[in-house]
Amino acid sequence: MNFQSFRRNLGLLIGIAVLSTLVSPSTVAQEGASVSGRVVDEDGDPVAGISIAIQPYKVMGNRRQEGLVPFWERQTDSEGRFSIWPITAAESVRFVVKGDEKEINILSIKLGELTLYPNNHLHPSFNRIRFSLEAETAIENAVITVKIDVRPQVRARVVFADGTPAINAQIRTRTLRRSLDGGGSGSSGNTKQTDAEGYFVADLRVDNTPQFYVLGIEHQGFFAKTPPFILHEGQLQVHLLLTLNDDPIPLDKRKPERISRALVAFLSPPTVWVVNPVNGHAYKRIQCHSITDAMTQATAENAYIVSINDNVENEWLRKVFEGERFWIGLSDVAEEGQWQWHSGEPVTYTNWEEHERDGGNNEMKDYVIVGYSGRWEAVALGEGQAHFVKQAILERADVPVETTTEDN
Image (cartoon, rainbow, N blue to C red; front, side, top):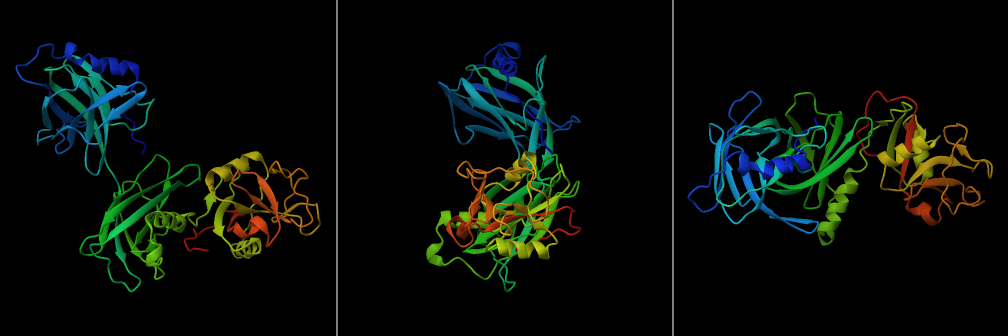
């Protein structure tokens, strides 16, 4: 689900800036301004226990400076009411609505006869607005209507290889998510603490398109990850077991930056088949020692090293499998200068790097990789760049019935 919410366009800002004129033109005999009202849901029922905060900010040139935490914050009571006072020395403020373990989407704000609505079609989820607030101005009886979506969560237990729970342990987490058609992806990381039984809870981001997730963790140089999993409609919690491996990073090499890189490498790529919606073929990135090792793995998977037949397929592959160099199935090892795909398909498209002026033809270079630029480079086995390319893309014309979850 994509949570549609507030758009900070010019009309909205003008409306907010003149609140004191339209709603409460009188001042009060007190130092500082005040904002009070109540928060209700779509059915008009009060929403208790969420935070309403006012935070000052300044604009200096083209740069906006804001504090890291709200300066004035109150929670709504059992009737959804709140009152923030006094708000001092702040002409420009940021108004924030938030809730623990919830996504909150502002639907409207009613201030006297004035009701403000978000431009939902113009901006993604947004739960804060900025406005001007004159000194000693009272904004009263504001009614904020919100939509609340509880964030789905993972509840996971961490155990060592022998089954002993990792209790009261600090762990580093990283979650990968990818849409099922491979068209969108993302990742997030955090630090968590397990409880007395080895459990921790982590939120999951959910979008409109169906996604799969992979959760990985690190603790004292040990790593663990889940098989890819999917949230079912209405599912609010996934229960998982994470078993740490028995081959930790040595203590003298556990620098934070190395641990972070190692966790990313441990999770990426997810060893699942990703379907290209254009041609219906399935693709998977594998780890390999060489192109010959990749071919062996391809045979075991009833697949072939990827063939790239047009620019659309080439760009889709770059988008889905970005970040590293990889082997493709093009070779002239059978006949020098006659390039052939591993699949046996005819060569109808090429994307050679600029320095490959002769189209990759070189007696010593018989295989092809996709470089960091996304273009093709001919390489010789056992020499130069070939030593460092440890990934390949497999392709199948049909989608496997079962999703692979084991590392290659």
